[in-house]
Image (cartoon, rainbow over all chains, first blue to last red; front, side):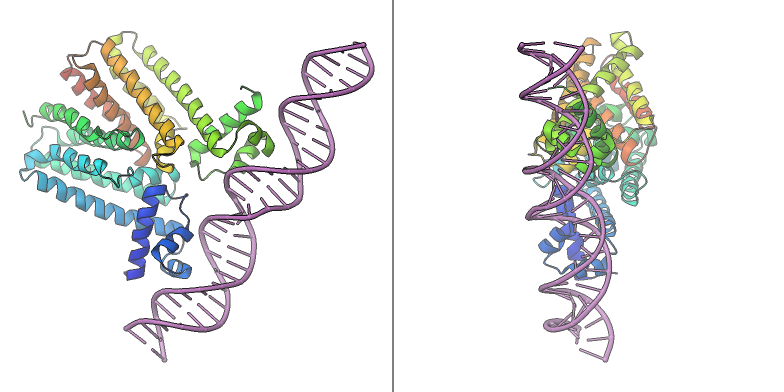
Amino acid sequence: MTSPKRDLLIDTALRLFGRHGFHAVGVDRVIEEAGVARMTLYNHFKSKDELILAVLRRRDERFRNWFMRRVERAAPDPRGRPLAVFDALDEWVRGDDFTGCMFVAAAAEYGGDDPIHRAAGEHKDLMLAYLRDLCAKAGAKNPAGLADGLNLLAEGAVAMAHVAGHRDAARTAKAAAEVLLRDAGLQG
Amino acid sequence: MTSPKRDLLIDTALRLFGRHGFHAVGVDRVIEEAGVARMTLYNHFKSKDELILAVLRRRDERFRNWFMRRVERAAPDPRGRPLAVFDALDEWVRGDDFTGCMFVAAAAEYGGDDPIHRAAGEHKDLMLAYLRDLCAKAGAKNPAGLADGLNLLAEGAVAMAHVAGHRDAARTAKAAAEVLLRDAGLQG
DNA sequence: GGTCCAAGATAGAACGATTTGTATAATAAT
DNA sequence: ATTATTATACAAATCGTTCTATCTTGGACC
C-alpha cells in the first residue's frame, strides 16, 4: 500500500495539480518531474483519476493536520481557537506557494457526480465538523450556527484571496468573525 | 463586433464551460453543439483563450445584471437590499443549472498571471463594489467593512453549495449576515 | 428586375503535438 | 529468484489551429 515511488508520485502530482490544475497537467509531466517510468505510475494507480484521488486524500490529511496544529498552537485556550482559525488562514493565503483551495479546484473541474468532486465535498464537511468542535469547546451559545458562519467567512476569504488576489482577505474575514463571536457570547 | 454566429458560439461555450470546465471542453465540442463550422469560430476569435475571455465577459455582464435586478426586486427599500442579496443567492444556488461560480473555476484552471484569471478577479471586484454601494445606500455605519463581510459570506455560500452540495448554504449565510447587519446598525 | 462581386459560412482534410493507457522486454534490487 | 523499475514502442483518441475549396448570401450597380 505504501512505497517510496508511490509517495513521490503523489507528492509530485500534488504540487503540479495544485499549481496548474488537473486537466492541464498530464501524466507525462508528472512522471517526468518525478523522474519515474511511465509504467511505475500505472503500476501504483489504475488511472489518472485514481492518482488524483490519492492526491486529494493526501492533501486532505496534510492540510487538516497542519491547520489544526496551527490553530491550537496559536490559541492554547480553547475559547480563543475559533478566532485563531483566521490567523492560520492568513498564514496560508499569504504564503508564496498559495494557489487556492485544491478541493474547490477539483470540484470545478469534475462534475458533482464524479468521485473526485465527492472527495472534495467530504473534505469540506470534515473542515466544517472541526469548526463545530472548536465552537462547542469554546462554549459558544449556538456552536453549530457559529461554526457555519465562520466556515462561510473562511471559504469566502480563500476564494477572494485566490481569485481576486486579495491578500488581506483572511484578516478581513477575521474582523467579521469577531462580530459573529460576540453574538455567540464569546470574546465579548 | 456583433454577429449571430458569434453570439451562438459564446452562448454554447458558456453552457459547456460552465458545466464541464474549460480544459475539459475542446473547441470541437463547442462548434459541434453550436452547429457551426470550425473556421467560423476561428474567424470570430483568435484562439480558444479569446473565446473564453468573451464567455467570461458575457457571463459577468449577464450575471451582475440578473443579480442586481433580483436584489432590487426583492427589496424595494434600499435598507433591505444588503440582506436581499442572500435571497438572490439562494435562488441561484438552488437552481437545477447551478454549477458553481464560473469565475472561481476560471481562476482555478488558469494561473494568476493569465488574462483569464485576471478577468475573473475583475468580476469579483465588481461584485464587491456593488455590495459596497448597497451597504452605503442602506445607511450602514461602516459600509465598506459590512460589504466585505457580506461578500465573504456570499462567496463562502457559493463554494459550499457547489463543492459540498449544501443547498441551504445561502440561507445559512443569510443568518450570519443578519448578525453583521445588526452590528452595522441595520435591521435592528 | 437582373447581374456581379465580395464577404462570410460551409465541410473536410491535414497539421503536429499531446492525451490516457497498454504491451513488451531488458535491467536492477532485494 | 522474485519483485520492482526501467525504456521503448504502440494504440487510439483528442488537442488547438490552419488550409483549401466550395457554397451561400446580400447588396451595389446598371
